Length: 153
Image 1 (cartoon, rainbow, N blue to C red):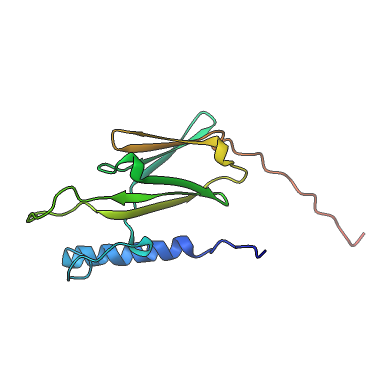
Image 2 (spheres, rainbow, N blue to C red):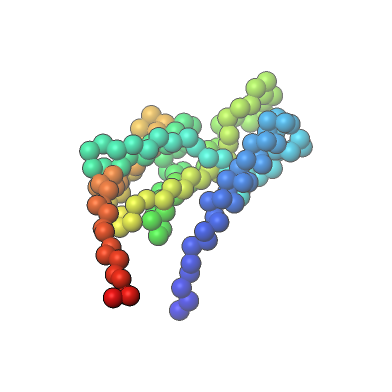
C-alpha cells in the first residue's frame, strides 16, 4: 500500500488561483471578461473567517450566508481542517445591475495544532455562520528544551 503525502504547495496554489481570479473580477467585472465559467476547486471563492480562543477551545467562524447547511462539508485530514461546499444562485432569468456575491463552490483550509482528533471537533450552523469548535485546540503545549551535548569532551 502506498503512502500518500500532503502537497505542501496546495494552499499556495489555491491562494494564487484566487488572487488571479479576484484581479480578473476587479478588472472585468467577471471571470476574465467573457461568459461566466463553472467554478472548480482551483478557482473556488474563499469565505471570510474569524479564528479565536474561548478558554482552551479554538473557535473558527465562517461567513456562509445563503448556503444551506446540507451544502457544507467539514473535514479533517493530517491536521488540515477544510470547509467546502456550494452556494447556489436562487434566481434565474434576471438582469443583474450589481453582482458582487460569489456563487458556486467554495473552500477554506486551515492548519490546526498537532494532535487534534476529529472527535474533538464540532460544527454548528446558525444564521449564515458556521462555528467550528476545536476542543482544547487553543491550549498551546509548553515548549520542550533539548539539551545540547558537547561532543568535544
